[in-house]
Image (cartoon, rainbow, N blue to C red; front, side, top):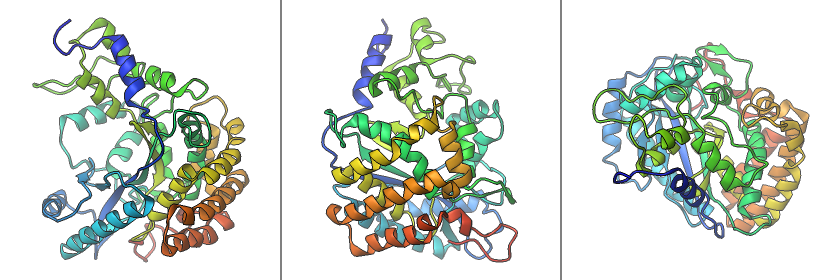
Length: 417
């Protein structure tokens, strides 16, 4: 075996160990993606050179939250793991205020929408990774480019949970994430438009995610133990590309990571290749030691993102709320059927109909009530509790979602910031 070469057994062992790191839930994080528009002329696309200049200035700001740029120029703030919900909210809110101020000086603003409503996808980052990703996704249609260059989300990161069973056990949390995930899609759907047209979906962002690839955007089977199921899913997923120092990154069509391990062609894979392969998979819930919930559309307003963060954290990390949420969403498994999320009937109804779907509305009402009861126990401030209560009254109780308030791109009124 050459230096660094990885065997199939070693790969399986690594995946079982690194993807579900169990222990008591102690930390929380959030990854916020934003569209960036011209502050005064939001209907016009922002030139990429202007975005590059603004982002160069942002990197000099005294913020604690790492800033990155997505392929289409979307801006992402990824919090460090926080010891509590309020620590996470306070740190990210302060950094967001700094970022917003710097962008405003340059005539730019952050926009909380799940999908760019007016302009076609435009890739800003010209890197080998994104060249390979674009080529891969183009095989199945335009959804991949829309995801890469025009989408934005609120991603909630939570500890995997205890090894033991129970409301905070990692097996329970893994299953609940894939059922509650549909409720979160429905409640926070915020992307009804694309390229200037109404799509018929409350979350066209989620519709695009489900269409980007036959494998890489899907959840693994949920009937098997999580570690074994995820390891098999990763190894049997096609390789997006084999990285090289020279020339474009590509891979033989249909080559899975398991086949690569066995054939060792075009070169023997290494641990670094496995780590990279994991970054090319985009399931709605991604285990990275912790659980990364990736299904929530970006939210409107300066602090709209705090509502899905608070609700999700409460439903996972408060034992009483977790038990109530699990009992609420468990019956949804029958509707999901045997197809994986996000392509099953439950998730498609969540993205298309949102809380106009009676079953999803009923589940959301119960889950939001449980979250509201749990937030004081998690130390949430009155302000955060009030935001969740206001969202519940405005949307959940009425079977609505933020998409229902999004003005048409053709309307005279500008989009909400």
